[in-house]
Each structure stands twice: as structure tokens, then as C-alpha cells.
Image (tube, rainbow, N blue to C red; front, side, top):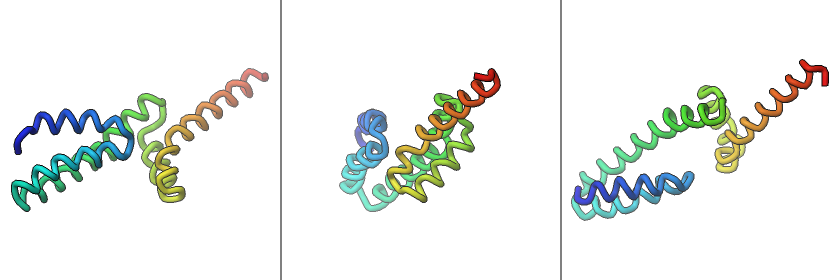
Length: 116
């Protein structure tokens, strides 16, 4: 594959666009692979799927859990449930709403403990 560094850089930049960025990063790689061979195109798709699965199922929950102090397991469970119930909106709002609910719960516990 030619320009692999450029494709990697572009993929890294596009990764900052939630949900749509990774798909957009696939387009240039597919265009190049289509010009090479069917085998190259299939390999690009397989590698893309593997990378996205690892990132979305292992890395993202770890990063979100550390940033928001939420358990990685809870993050994964909430995302699966919210996506199943609400689709794309559930995916977008699952983790922020969970963080908000957890914050409100902890504040309520502190007020209850302090008798306020």
C-alpha cells in the first residue's frame, strides 16, 4: 500500500469525529485498495473491522471509565443497553447520562450522610 503514513495520519485526525470519523477514514484506504486488487480491498476491510472492534470494545471503555470514574464494565453494559433501546441516540448519550446519574447519586449520598 502506498502512502500508508498519510492514511494513518488521516485516520488519526478523523478519529476525533465521533462515530462518523472512523468510517470516513476507511474511504481513502478503500479507494487505494480497489485500485490494487480485490484481495487488497478485502484485507483493508478486515483490518479496519478488527481495529474498530478492539478500539470500541476495549480501548474506549477503558478511557471513558478513567475520564469519568465509571467502571469499564458498567460503561460497556450501559452502552449495549442504551444502543439496543434507543439506537444511535442511546449510543451518543449513554455514557454522559450514566456519569451524570452517578454524580447526582454521590451528591445525594453525601447530603444524606451529612444530614443536609
